[in-house]
Image 1: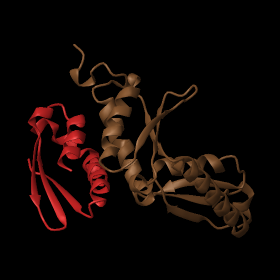
Image 2: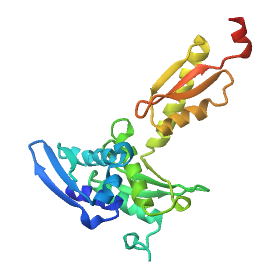
Image 3: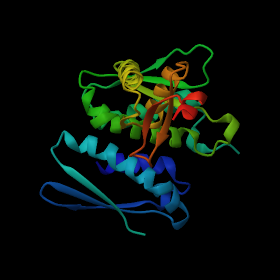
Image 4: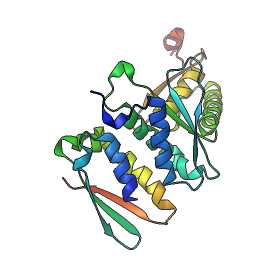
Amino acid sequence: MKELIELIIKGIVDKPDKIEISQVVGEKTLIFEVKVDPDDLGKVIGRQGRNIKSIRTIINAAAQKDNKRVIIEIIN
Amino acid sequence: MENTNNMELNPQEKAEAILTKVIDFILEDGKVQIVDQEGNDSIILEIKTSNPGMIIGRHGHTLDALQYIINIIVNKGINEPERRKIIIDIEGYRKRREDIVSKYAQEKAEIVKRSGKKVALCFMNAVERRIVHLVLQEDPLIITYSEGTEPYRRVIIAPREKENNKEEL
């Protein structure tokens, strides 16, 4: 799951080496805390949050087969 | 200097590569095929799988999110005229939706013509609203327009008002 988040966010930011993703494991829910370069924040979130919303939708499709829910928090 | 991220891949190869990687996280048996397009600037990719529902998602939301993100990734750092639109389909889903939406729009248009009252369709994304407008644009008895803010935006079909109608009332 972390690899997928990394793959997508790497593809949309300008500074992929500044991405930090850490995982907090819950019972049914996986929480990922994502940190990116401040200049890339807008790219990850997108206009009216459209980018991050799409990322969450894709990640939750991948999590579905493990019967998990994923929460992605941007913690800049 | 060229962006090293591209690794000399053209947009079509780049789209195919990234989509293949992403669907491998979602599907057991997903394969990506490039659909030959004639005289079309878009890149069309079709996903083949025994489990299309996983990618389509509710009301096609996952497929739309996937298409949106792949467009951003492939077109990153490319200026407007060079950008390529990427359309992602899966097991003929988009064509099937097009047929369903066209038929639904025509049925509702008949109701409007019979009753003389306007009808609001269900909420749709921009692509599907466009299908409705296109299907009904030639009909002289009705007009179509959209109302509301995404994702709660929908098409309204209304009887076309005649000039003399107003005077009679």
